[in-house]
Image 1: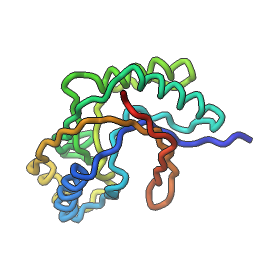
Image 2: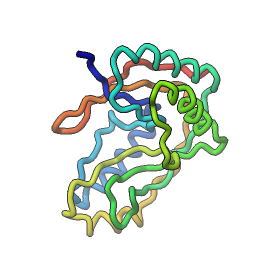
Image 3: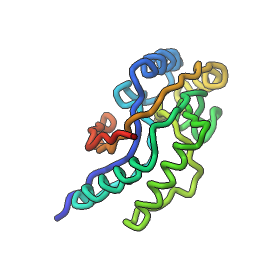
Length: 188
């Protein structure tokens, strides 16, 4: 029997930005809405979610990811905007957006897609919306307090230079997932 590892490719949120995000999250928590809030150590921006990957495929995936990374340098991103999927009036996921004005992040993601598609990893049909997940709504309780906060609070834009990406393992647990870095890859 082969084992599978739930895997994704992302970049981590640096401590100064994480602190500002935690501050905003603390204000949102005051809504007492029925939301499972993410802990600061899990704040990342997913570039590509791979799902359950055969453990035997991991070395090849790591190699492909490194090859893509060598073809792209580091890039600037701006954490900006508070929002929710599908929208702020019916939130399921509360997030902070991530923009990359020069388009390098999208090109990097498209290169990953092109390299991984022949290995059976589907290309996401939805548009790429990089974001940091603050929390996942579990029920309707307190949403009448959370919704106006989502529409009225702002997040002061935070610009960073992304110099590394990570291939992460996600282990699902009853209290939420646990993330482990499988490999950190430097962007030249």
